[in-house]
Length: 398
Image (cartoon, rainbow, N blue to C red; front, side, top):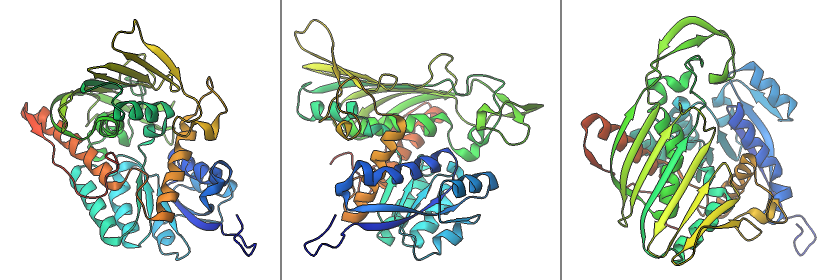
């Protein structure tokens, strides 16, 4: 993109990725696609460095063209040429690395759950704020075009006064008792499926309907122990396990009844042990003049009905709905999970370039963590719990 003198005005940002498993690689892929998908962004991202303790991941990073590969994340953060950082580590490592990244003065894009608790998430948010760095958090289901369309309809009043919503995230990735024990089933990973899956549902409620301010909940562990894996494997999908078992320490399931600050009643449900659903992530919103439904298993389809109509009408996503037009020319085609991460990469880099918080922020993740903590308290106390309001640049009210 040349300026008046004919010189290029495209800014090159050097990206460092800490943790190069599945999610770190998705971040790298998102960075790669930016100049192609969003040429007007005025920036390209150079894959400058990966830090990962596992040699197998470092080897993949070398094969994928990173300029430098190291084992210690501190070496990456100490490099003055690194402009932005992606954090794709297991969640129990997030606090240490995020605080160090903020202290280094580098903007960072981190996966959810950002902290294992509201307290950790508050620490990270406040550290980033004190350092004056932009943050991004991986609430990528916001980036589905049908979700963007749903938000427009709700905000335009097409459904009237919103009275209630149902949100459920059911998956079977841990439904087999023979599935290997991994870090995800440890208390060190936080409240299990509540932070792993339900945090996405909470963020969708915040994004579409506003902040959850009170709730009551129950949760449970249905598979009490799991076999230990033999050697390295693909997480809970490791094929070889031992005869030794370990006790599962965090939640398999949770059900929540909540109220938003605007008065809507919301039910939320999550499970990682539901035999059948692979990724049945559903949002239903009901208002005085209509309702809508969206299911991630059919991501480009939004069902909408208005008062007096006989049944739901299927609105297939098209250019003009969110970022659909950047990826597909017309209805009937889909954006992948990876495409949604590219949208997220764009929003993060644009936030860094402009200083405006366009991507879900650390404060958004802190607010979701406050909900998770309230769910845990409610289950323990058999009580109705208030959800504290956080400080910082939340984006769901924008």
